[in-house]
Image (tube, rainbow, N blue to C red; front, side, top):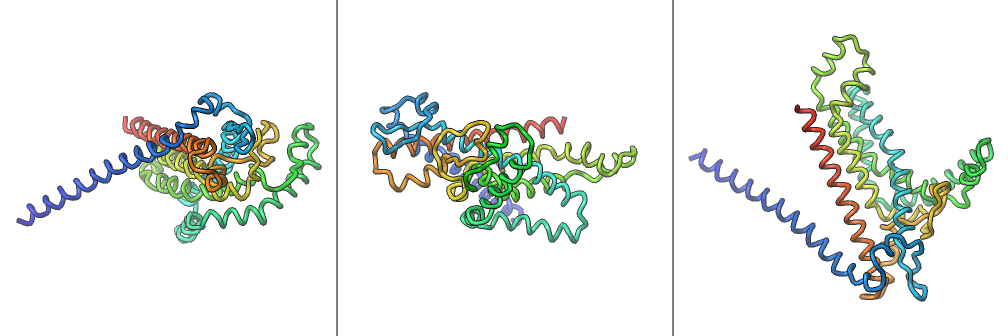
Length: 316
């Protein structure tokens, strides 16, 4: 009798999990349908190619211009800059917590890192707006004056204001760190101790074991953490709205990281409340949201593929 009741509850739990999975897929599809419903009318005023390659975002001009390229490049500069900071720092921090730090220090540092995930994004934006922006501006100008480098680099470092793509990159890197550190540290901790002992028995040092054995064995988990960190960075709104300068102009390759930019998420947040319903501006913002949805979906799909591909290779 007890076994039959247990089997009955297991069937209910399995059905609940299956329904939850199906519901998640349905919700994602419905969100996409909702976005496309209000995004597709913008194609009456411009083609997909004109939207993606347009270099001017002027929704209030006559005629209005809805070029997505400055916003896409602004998001790209901020995202790439954040990842260049967050990935090495996050993996190094996870490696230190898992392989180097004593137990008492690990129990102190890991909760401190994870607390960053609980800080509201508006607080990060406020810190970047009031403190970090001025620090970056002063520091870049000092480096530009002291650095005997090429003229384009000196000109790029001469920032006119502290609110720029690099300020957003630094703040987003801090916001992505908890995700990368937590998942990467769990992956490193899950590597069997026998791997390390086998490496030590062959004469490898502690650092050689970390670099050539532990990190490669945890590669799938580390990559998953990095990809989820990318999704966190791409989808952030309030912080980049406050600290990137909100300038919807084409960023140059040489100076883009040190100049004001505007991201796709910041554009939607700043202008959606001001756009009239069913106007070209309104539909263009929904088209921007649909593009952001597809980019995020592609990143998550790539993360899932890479994770499963690495797991398949590791089990062979």
